[in-house]
Length: 419
Image 1: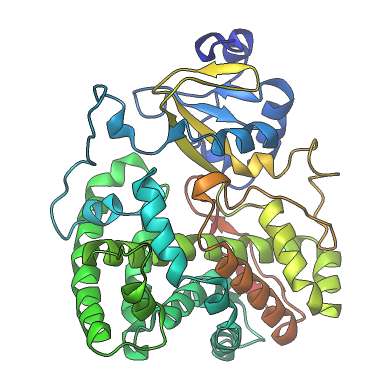
Image 2: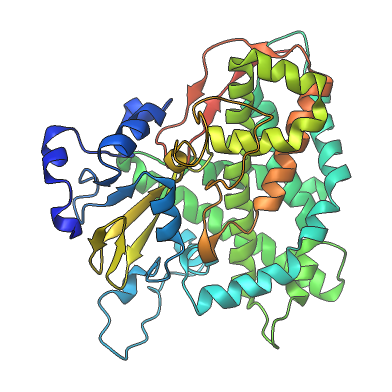
């Protein structure tokens, strides 16, 4: 079946899916279940006034698509003539676009392969695991500043600052400068799922942030070249793969990507996970009684309410998923949050069970773009939940959660709790 003719009856009989639908903000999972049952490969709403995207709601389809290298991110190659080797669009120096241009997140092989190999050389599992004591200390210090008897905002006072402090510590940012990273990260966070009407103001703020962070990192990089230390920036400067190194601009862009991507995923993991646990008091009590379950609980919480709900690719060579053919140029979203609730892959998927043998989840993607920072996000989540159970075993909700706009990155703006 060709994508242009797939499921025509369903498309006219029911509203088309849109990630901008505000009714999905707090709970998209009932809608996902409906699409998995009735229209699992679905042509969605026209949200940008251009090509209409498609959505894959089943785990098997999403997994197959993300593993297929006939789809990718480098949209500018779609109009290239045979034999041409187009480069990504030029961007003015010290702008957000200039940083994003060198993010491996948006590149395909061979550039992605090169950047990923260099990052892997420095951002190793051993380096991440070695930060466990420091992460635990940072988590405890944040809770030290909270009055356990009064309501507080878990996002503002714990879930948001912790990942920023952790990545700044791993990078080797001086303690007196870590407040700057919190400000920069707040600007990046505000960019996610912003309504279209705010794009002009957003771009201005992003570009100002990009110039400031680029200047700052150039200074730090120069210091680490002259005096290397046991930190990630020094390791990335020294990283080599078959004689290749990061350029300075690639190094700056990769550092900002680690700040941005790692921060957003982990804030949402801690916030969404804590909300899920407190809405299921039996699960919270189990974790309080057995904090050694924190690692498995983190995996289940990543499945149950994924911090990243979907990711997209462009089709560069016609491919088939689930019996539907997608033509060159088609934009397709793999709906990770739906895949993680697929009853074909998980028993009773809408039930939260921190003892579950979770197995393979889609939260961090699949294929060559599988999240580089997933070990760090998992470690931070486990430490955060374990620390909360030790320090605030009586934690309860103190108000209704407030969700951020949009659902592509699914997370809370505010979560009022009391210990």
